[in-house]
Image (cartoon, rainbow, N blue to C red; front, side, top):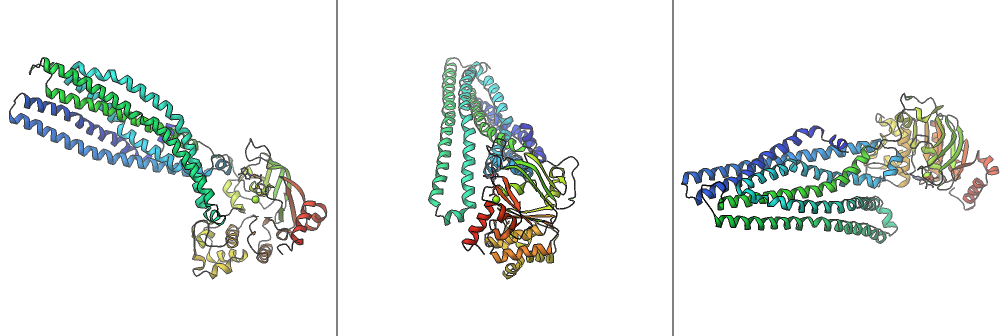
Length: 583
Ligand SMILES: Nc1ncnc2c1ncn2[C@@H]1O[C@H](COP(=O)(O)OP(=O)(O)O)[C@@H](O)[C@H]1O
Ligand SMILES: [Mg+2]
């Protein structure tokens, strides 16, 4: 895990090293201050001359300035190192998620990936900053201050040794209890983010169904639960402070008591084993430093406890390999638009009770137009997602252009197979930019031509800015039907060998729908076309129509054949024509 994370330090190695070094200088200066102070007080107490006092005074000032300067530098290097580290970590995560297959994303869930990329990275960043700052500081301070207080106070300083086990035990108990709590906490974070993501993305739907109250309750519940869990964890963590203070006060009390007895009893000015007020003051300051650094260590422990869980979740993503991999010697050309399904079965998860597809056999010739019809959940979308290898078949084989889809270079395959997904999306940017996703080098004429085919040209040119019209994220500026047509145009620009429209004209009026189909028949006759539709009218002039039912092919044939052979098809057709249908 550490190795994976450390990989993200990269160009920030120098500040990561400079930070603890500057901290070291800061700490040395800081540690010398009480020592010099002790000398100063001793000098005053024993009535040494002004020059000696001045010498120690300037020494003190110098140390303070040194500690200040290096403190500032340390802060700067720490920030640079930790922010850079977090930046690289986010970058790595984002890159990794980009390589994920659909099933990888399904298994993590989108909201969990978002949490990992944001909250978890911040946690690790903070812990890293703390570690860089304290890795040298605390142990150094602890040892140095301890040694100095023994020098100043002799065996009395050993009081610390008695307090340490108490402290260590308290800390261990706290962390032992808190660790599992944090593990649960992050799952709750995922839930909260899911609720936020769904609601912000689907605000229009929520509002139009007047579901704000319900959604507010759902969010409130997730948020309350998070709060409760956090409070619980923090309550335990908060014990850290009183335990710390208890130890601190016990040792102060003991130190003061023991020192006072010595000072009152037998103070001999020139005897190094004897103790003066100066030594005493110095020792108290050092013991403060010892205890402070212990406190800091315990804080770092707590922080690291939290961050380990986050780090775990981050490395989980980083070490997941996409389960769709390019083959060793991939094919870089698609011969033609033939498609064959041979005994194909598919499950979304190995543990899923029912297969989404069962023993599908289907052969589609290059240039053929095939309609697919079936109720919702009959696996129409699943079937076509195997063609562009969004998922791999669990059993059987899918062939495109006569070759197994797994033999192709993924990019080649997906460029050859253009899918207008059911849940299509436009991205923020101009219409032109969105269209060029299909072909970055398309000329304006080509864009216009594709839009004419998809019946989008007329409404696009009616916008004041035409093809330069800016579309907000998710395409809220255009109507559903307009968005569908832009998505079809975008798919056409890829000049694919196979074009798949998954319910892509559902929001388009029937007349336009017919025009789009005619344009495709006439303009791209050699492209294999698969049209998934709810309306019989959208598929009835296809060469063949496949009727899907519960993940199996119920029947397959032309419109006329199916009216005779398929009860499902007949029923759908009759219900749509009887009701006046869409036509
Ligand atoms: N990403 C997914 N993970 C798990 N199950 C899924 C996923 N997508 C679809 N399914 C399930 O597979 C079945 C077929 O879905 P789908 O192919 O979308 O149907 P259709 O497009 O015909 O409406 C449904 O039962 C659905 O719940
Ligand atoms: Mg579907």
